[in-house]
Length: 607
Image (cartoon, rainbow, N blue to C red; front, side):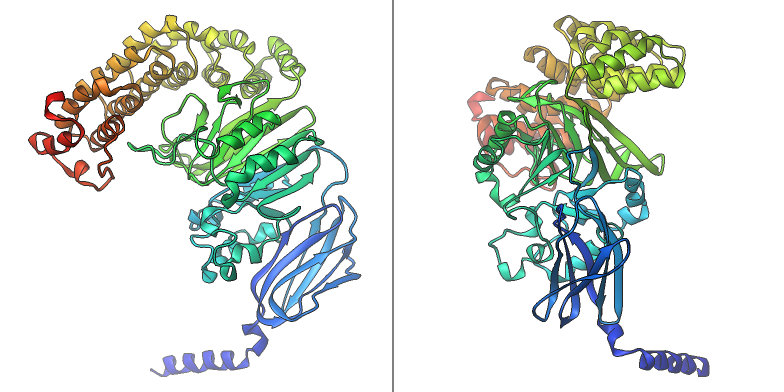
């Protein structure tokens, strides 16, 4: 008892000795905003109202001062009259606290540079800090970050914001994290008094809803989430001159997206929705890169123009929603994440080079328990770039050979496929696997028939890559053998899933539909194979197939397959029943108990 009383006394004495200003200081520490060639804004919030003051200067000498005119708690102070491409030290005092660091102005010249993309960080809990993802991203020396929005669960809740700024505190005190407004931030005109996103950020150019800035050789356009409808008109006017070598457009909502994994097409975007006019503007103004978030997955499209793959003049659409859970690939998909191997958080590093753009994406590997690379893409401006790499390949060996194969794959250079193909037969497993990955990245249908023998290789990783390559592109002559391989129960489930995709996207719909029904009839087929078949029927079937679908639905035991079949019957009959993960249809047992659901889709005479 005496010990406890003594401890209480000590704690009371410490509290009594703590000066009043210690309870004051920063509520939100200074963070960098709106970096230009001649100015930088710092924003912070103090616990008590005061005048915001920033001391700053070159070479560590804090010889200049910027000061607010009035007393307030949210401070927005701009350092002006700066020199381009120059580091400036700064110091901010608040109560008894002090924060200082160095930040660099935007470059004067149109030079290459590197930046990092993240998104939907509100869902990360402690994963960004725990995995040390920020330290990993720092190795690329990014000059700024772009956050695709949804920083907090509800942007109008004041108490949620400190967590966001704390999470990225070691970055935003010296680098600009320019942020696109997401739906969770709330609209610009919605409850303006509590628009904390607007109060805590200063977006570049004219500000929201269309924020623009130039950095090095690239012009950036950021579209706020509540201005999607007007975006295409703005882009047409704004981009008509095309002064910069590159343009990057970013908005919160994806234009192309596989959506979430699951039996219902949740958040799937096929380039046909409300954002289609933005995609058309990407084509008109030859924009090479479009970034989005919102859907909590990672995926990247092939370069697309008018909705079709175009390696020379297409736009690459990237969804980095901060997490891993993408659905099955679509024809536009170059890569989708793998929920069995990876998890949040993710980031994408982008380099805007003189003759190429490259991007790499990293996430947390489940099995490796380490940060792993899941995507590497190179976009070239002149065909001389891949041609030079192809010339190097012919005489390369060892590590140089692997590097050449990897680069040509990342460039998706179709002529390289024939040259890389022989390396599939290498006795070195690493070389063979590297070649398979490159061929998958290239996705050249002209070599697809030559890949078929590798569907029988004992190398599981190689077989799976070949199957995915055929899913991306194959010729009609491959269909029969692929059909046989899909129905072969000796094949592993991942290969079968991908080969069914090859039929769905590259074969006659009737063939793919027949295989899908055949797979659903295989009660002993692995669950992922039957799920993939049910998913495919969602787009392969017509109203004439509804009776057959209903019969399969009636006896199906798998919750996923049941829900997908119900979703498909809803689509075909225009009858919107309640189909959710916890709804009555999924809870129902096979048999007569499902007849009532079927009756709502099909009159008795049509079953």
